[in-house]
Length: 550
Image 1 (cartoon, rainbow, N blue to C red):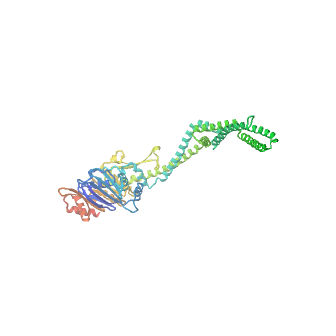
Image 2 (cartoon, rainbow, N blue to C red):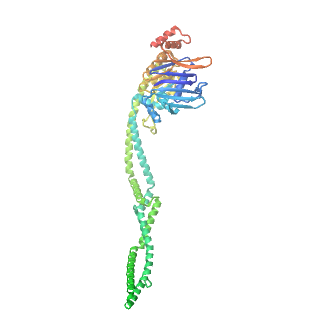
């Protein structure tokens, strides 16, 4: 609910502070007094385009501040946009438009965008004028209004729709996977055959490489050992010469005892040489390998590495790749059976959705009949007795089915007998349109809407009983929501719980628009003026008293 409005330097308004309460508030004033300026100022605070022409002549900027009691939905919207509002705290929106261009917006003194103000405004205020193209005129919102009137939520349909979409998504994903696998079947079979024949094992490449390195080193060591053996053995080897020397020393040592130590040393050298010879032989045996083993290991190693390059993986990943490709083939072979199960789930989910949507459609058609009757009952008193109203509930194409069901809902009217039905905004004239909106709002009153509704000159061009009927319906509607009405009708003005007078004044140099609340005596005088014109008569005052007495 709008609780306060502060306006600074907007067109003819220099400074204005207004407070608003619940119920029906009426705004009156002579033609040209500036009633539209008030609505323009409120629209500015609610995110409408900030025109520099709104800035009062000579002022640097225009400032409009609107204060609301904020519902929880608005608090959620603010939180979702990174703004903070404490529970129970009033919502204060402020808009500043500079005379040299540019504007700024604030929500509870936190910078915000004009787009966010528009979102907030759509949740808090409905403004209905003769050229309004929002609210009830937008067919996109008619389905939700009918559902609210029918008191039928779409939760069951939404859940069924989500389950159907999920099942269909799973089926589509499976089909895409199988189709892709089918395209790759020949390649998969060939790759799996190659990998199966190769039978790679984790860690095998490193083991083969190490064994290859060992055998290659062994070949070089064996060559060196052969050279050492040649130095020790053979006809020219050191060991052969030592043995020959020992035999000579042994023969002559008998005659020369002094050579005994030399002989012993040579004998020891022969013994150590023999030990070395044995160790060299053992080492040579240990280093011996089958040349074919090296060839086989190298061939296996090169095959593993070539296969890894082919599949762009590491050699150690070949075993896992083989398992993965084999699994893809197995899933492909089992795919058709899996598809059958998924297709059955889709059929079941679609059937459940169609059943829920059909039940909702029946509820909507029944509610549409009741709504049409309720609106029809409001038309004649509003001087729309020749008009007809209907709620169209039509099936949508399957591609347009949604979580909200399978129906297109639109409010249509025909203003003259025999005339075709058509959309509200295209068929009704300005005055008729406002009264149609009022009739709809009264019929839908229990279903709520924005916390504040504003009707701009809904009674233009009517008077007498029709104006009285409009006033009565506005008062009835105001019991469920805050309602502000700009009016020229005394019958409507007399229904207000609060009455604001908009007046223009001039000091000969500057013209200003002001707004002030009226007390009971002032209300009687203003309504009398509306009845009689410039000269207020006693008869007009008496008539005003009767209207106020209701």
